[in-house]
Length: 373
Image (cartoon, helix red, strand yellow):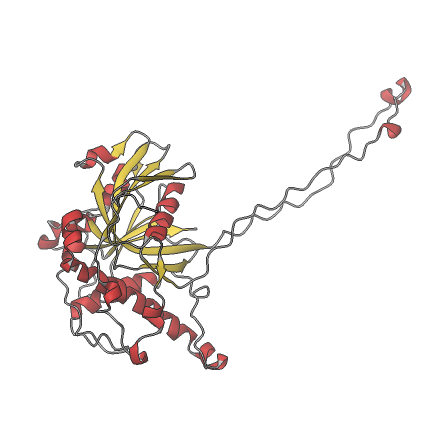
């Protein structure tokens, strides 16, 4: 069977909230591949494969997603996180940082969906997160980016399908044989209507567990200029994924932000230096402090968002369960840090890709997080 050209547009509809059109996807596999072995099966169980061939970006995938909404324009409920790894932990910017605009690289996503992203110039956050206005389509966008990623590192089980509890059926106990026509004397001596039997109010169902997906994503306007992406009642935007950058799936705590993004654009990430070819040894500082600092900032923020009890670590062959229980907290944190390290390393390595430099605006690309079902 002859395949059509890779640039042929494929249209798919996901529910009522978004519409996805798959454009160019040169160098991408037909389906996502699991990449957990990069975290848990390191060479000699000591080195992260930061220079693995699988983390090399050879192509990009462009998705045009139409996100529909019904609310009027409103300010986005943003929050700002400043990591403790900095010597100066102040969230307020200096004169140099006051002129920086890279921290708002993700703002077009919110602006196009009628959510004004107001980021004060006087602040220099490491992570910007958003709690609303809530759009169910945000879940769909995150799930689509996860499904279309070439590599996926999954550290939690899929959320069970939401099943609404059946409503109790109220059966009438009145039958035709029990009906009687009251006489006039009974009607005159009728007493007051009896009070209904007290019924306990049912407790609300617990919130369904959610997940976080972390991806390196680029944003492009629909037709050259950003105002073309903000249509009445819908946002139309192009999302760019890189073939060598894995998506990370983590269990989310109740109340985790709806959206979040790292304040560094891809252009700034390209300024980081990867550790030597022998990788990163656990517990040893990277050769480049800036690279390790970016990883530590992301991990410190994720400490507040990840539900560690639901985080899943594959059982190692030949290991005893008692040893696993004693090391469970340490192992889980190390697994998340290793996954984030691989994502940042793959983002740095996109600098050598011709497709990335051709199709992607490095000033509108970076590491973003979506809360998904």
